[in-house]
Length: 171
Length: 121
Image 1 (spheres, each protein chain N blue to C red):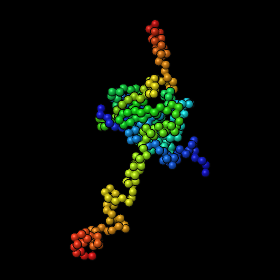
Image 2: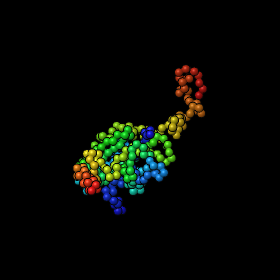
Image 3: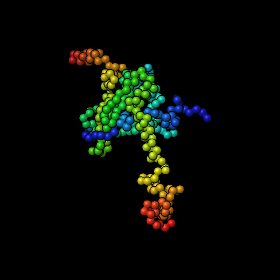
Image 4: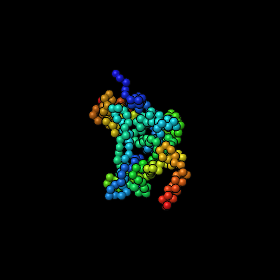
């Protein structure tokens, strides 16, 4: 079985894309990366695009990511936020990991926020849930639980009429 | 124009014929090819209305989605010209540049004066 085609083909695996840790804030709408070819100071930005751009786009599918080559002498990354603000990240002579960390601290979602979101997603997707908006209305519909008292009367020990009001009940 | 929609950036391709201040803007968005697991640019053509901000064909502009459709097919407003064609300004230094080199304003001014004097002769 031959190797996967392409330079650094690991970038094209789903596990690699899912492993990206940079999730941008919801306010970021456009990300622009300007860099130059054959330019030492742009090397870090080029590496950033080479290794991390796929991951960033995967984790932020609604952000428009654009790359511009040889437009300006210095490489930089700019972000356009939803309130009209523009944030510039100077990437001149910076290493790819430096750039990644900087963006993460400035515009990335924190670990807590990501965990909260993951929890919210799990709650939504949990098949054991019942109630409004789920496939089963009541716990009585779930096999292994007490049947609906509308169909099968509850044993008298579970009825408030017997327990609390001390009334006589059948069964 | 009340615009509170999503921002998008693209390059102006052409002007609308018949309606002067409409522009066709080509925006690129990356789409994941599910077989190759690689992102490719997908072109999206957007018709935008040019109101306060004037731009030319070839400029790279920032558009904002309009909150309501006032005209058929025109969905966005031009908010800002990011890179005007031929007049690119490096946002970090604020100087004009041509590709990867800065434009020397003093030499340019001298050249312009020289051409002006030659023309008048």
